[in-house]
Image 1 (cartoon, rainbow, N blue to C red):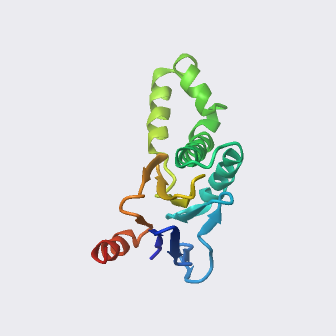
Image 2: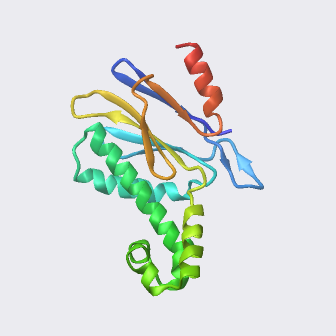
Length: 184
C-alpha cells in the first residue's frame, strides 16, 4: 500500500513515504524513491497506479519554476500547468493521433473538419482520458520562508493543505490521515 505524507512542524516540513512499486504481477517494497526536488525550496512526492507520467510532469514544472517566483501561488500554477499539459499530450497520443490532430487543433477546427459522429466519438474518448489516479503532494517554502503543502491530481486540480498542516496521498491516504487527525 502506497502512502506519502507531509506535515508542517513549526518552521519545518517533515515527510515520509514507502518505497513500494507494483508492476501488476510483481512488486517490491524497497525499489523506488517517490520524492523529487522541484527547485531549492520546493519538492514533490508521487503516488498513483501508474507513475510513469510523473517524470515528464516534474520536468516541465521544474522548467516553469525557473522563470517563476517562489510563491505558493506561482508554484501551484506551475505544477497545475505541467499536469494539464501532460493530460493534453496523453489525449493526443491516445485519441487524436489517428486523425493527425492535437488538442488545440481539435478544439479550434474539430467541428469543421470532422463529421458530427466522429467529433462526438472523439469528444467522448477525450473525456475518459486520465492519468490513472496520479497524485502529487508538493511541499516547500515560499520567498518569506513560510512552509506550504498542496496537492495536484487529475484533472489538474490543486488543493492547499496549510490548514490542517498535513496531507497524505496514495492508497494509504485514509489510514494515514485518520491517525494524523486523531493525534492532532
